[in-house]
Length: 265
Image 1: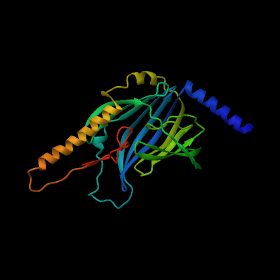
Image 2: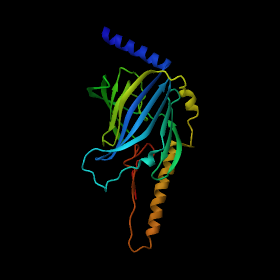
Image 3: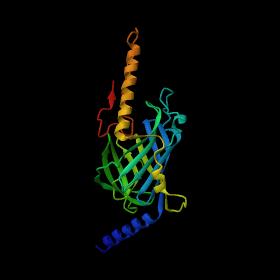
Image 4: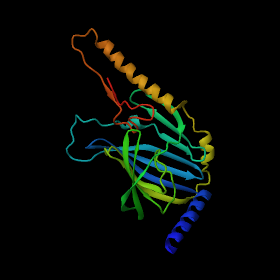
């Protein structure tokens, strides 16, 4: 009982120290659209008081196996020159994502929403990441199921991307389809960058056209349907017709609270 009490006291002291100084976390972020192709990104998470900032930038494309075909699709790194950013204020429950949608819209947006509430299921299992003891949890969020490994040694409820709501820092998380994965590389605490002021950065977070999450989803879906209609109209009088359909299955958020549809024809 004494050791349990000591653990919670130390955790409380650590949490108070985090509030006084910043913490920087570096992640490797990978997207595997096909089994043999992995797109690698560098992710940085900064936490200061109630504010957090996450950004990921494209690094390279690597081949997982030697069974590589020229017919397989490789994401061009030139298309990944746009840096996505996520700003969070846990006190006001605000989240803003600065993104570039490169497939359908080919435009940048500042998409704001209430901080999503992720419902976690705590699972049995222990693992070590970065010399830290981790516990296992699972959540289903906007069309994807994720398994996360988090550590109580750093009692921070914010993780990479939009992940939040666990009692400790997420060191590794991967979706059940093994498309998206984040894994910790390095932790800097305290992070002593004097110029860092996430509160000021949060005030300036709207870099592009400001839209709500609902508005953005409507813009995105309308553009998909318009493209399908346009291609159908072009094929109307052709002898050889080709069909076009679109799926959001490979998106980070294939569906959401507003839309369950992921296949468009």
